[in-house]
Image (cartoon, rainbow, N blue to C red; front, side, top):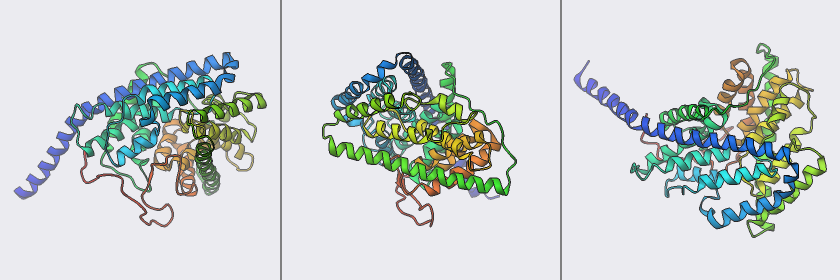
Length: 428
């Protein structure tokens, strides 16, 4: 064993140790901030849901609430209105520190959306609070552009992990969501550290996450794999349709209504009319009760389509929140409906759809598979993993995030655009 070999490997180990010592306290702060923000978000959304369901007349005020949200961003939030896409752009090409006002604006905007009856999620809010709070550290720590990029990725991972209680999925989401077909591992250490700390922080605030039970999982077989593939195709096509519909409605509203604050006002009128037209509130808000029900009872086969429409109109009009929890609703109820034609247990198909529609819409099959493992267990996760990969392959070349770049093609392996930032330096 030569002295040169020993020196080279010792220096490499020392650099890794130095990076670990440096990034551990940073990730601790990022995790605590993101986890606490997610705890506040989850608590506030529970309050909003309880108040709305106890006083359903509040839904009549969704349009004025939308106008307030629109004006709030028009006056104070133009710099941060792009939301998740702004964060992804900053990760790709770090330029300006994300204004801290993104956090209170998105928290308040999401609360108002849910309080008055919009159909939206919570992941967008968690990602934005996690990243914007993390970015507060970039100037005091004098981080270089590539280090700030890693900090933002850690904030994204922390936000996702803490809002859903899935630290493994959150850690991988932060590095997988940047580019379709390409994963950057330079931030894998900070992302994992921040994700697990954030999850612990949220739980320390005594916030409980919803539990989903898969009642029956058959032993994996050839027929089970084929059924999972068939289901994955359906999930992927619905994911693609959701992304295209939501983006299309957003573009249409911008073209027809030039004044931005009026878009959620008009969207609010449409959603309010639809709620009282169908006579139920199951398709607004997060829809957690229906998601839970999809694992245990037979639901109307159109539930997924109704949630699809309500959410596309809500988000396309400019309300705040996120797409992921509605995608869970769409996927789990679609899986429940598919149990009428596929010979798999309805609770298993609901679990598969829960993660697979999200996998296709966000182009994150690995994070989605890990989420299935964390939420439903390894046996159900195997079926869900097959569905996630197939859904990803059949969901088209784009997704719910405009700023997500293309790495390698889904089908032919051709490099399309792999510019996801400076990955020449690895930390941890």
